[in-house]
Length: 463
Image 1 (cartoon, rainbow, N blue to C red):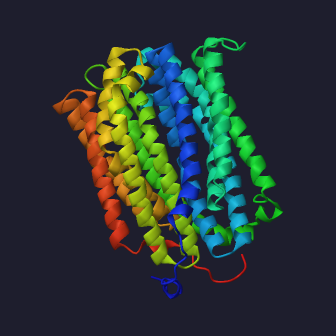
Image 2 (image 1 turned 180 degrees about the vertical axis):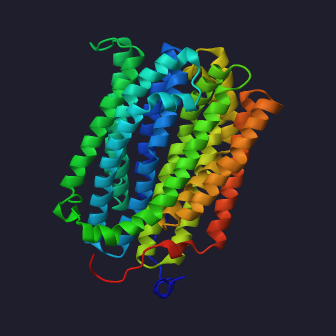
Image 3 (image 1 turned 135 degrees about the horizontal axis):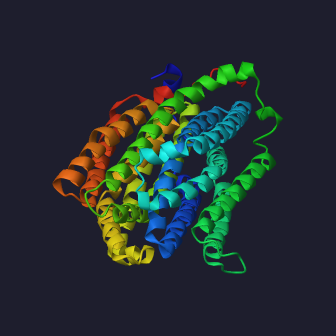
């Protein structure tokens, strides 16, 4: 461990439960509204047809894959900005904010162009069933246009979190949720004087809501004084400041790419099951939306861990960073495991709500039963990822996450899904096994490795 960090390791910054909860509860609410966006999309898709559910699941998984750079840059932004603020280098923090926002906007526009040019090749990779190919193609053409807005929402949210201004991303998500809710029902079924557009109304509602959220957050970044003239950086500063962003972002991006490629492959495994593949796809898509009740609050605890750990390491206090991380790990895993236990009794009603088709409901129920059992391991993995991400130790998360999905989940998914059970149950069971492995490896790293050494060290009082 660096000597500068050791000097202050014994100090106590007094991070208490109240501080952690103040940062976490707005993100929990934001996660709830974010869940509602996805839930309403899938619910309305199910009311239209199970084919629409399956097609949306496939396209949304690709969208998640395209957002890996946003996720990686968000992690890097929280680490760099949080550590800069902890070291009281405000100008450096503002410059990092401007750098990540500018890069992410440019990259997201390139992704739109790429997605439109190589649409057919992308749909071929995941072996979209012929019966839903025209529908999937249309959804792709519209949803690919939402990528810049998603990037701006994600990166703006990361910047605000690094500044501990967690309520503005919540307000943005409330706005997105309300516009999406009205748009989904209004445009899909012609309610409230809106035109009846069917499944096309779903994706255009998503486009409108994400655009509104992105514009709101960009305006607030300027009004709060985060994006100013000081945020504009020249090549000389980029040469000094960008290497740390790259050092954090590249392993994080690699982990995200491998993870999401793994999920695309997993969808391919489900799509090629010996029987009921379309029903299994629809059930998995709907089950993932319900699982988001647990998954997205995990993101909130993970983000709080990143904020506090990054800030404490920037101030040169690794011992307190480890203590706060451990408290958040315990708090998040216990709270959300209790929520999962309560949800267990509502699995069948939730499945019935999301799909009127009995075949789809059966797959939803199987998915939820297995993944609710995995909740302690899922939440532990997410929070530990946040702790290591706040320190900039994304090389460790790359190791744990990529081996979990490629060395454990996918081989087991094919073997159990195609050979042992010849059904989606085997695929879902492989997810539980991989999460046990992933959380165990991350906890071992957290307790035994010198992850604080990845943080930036304050060397001067200027930027």
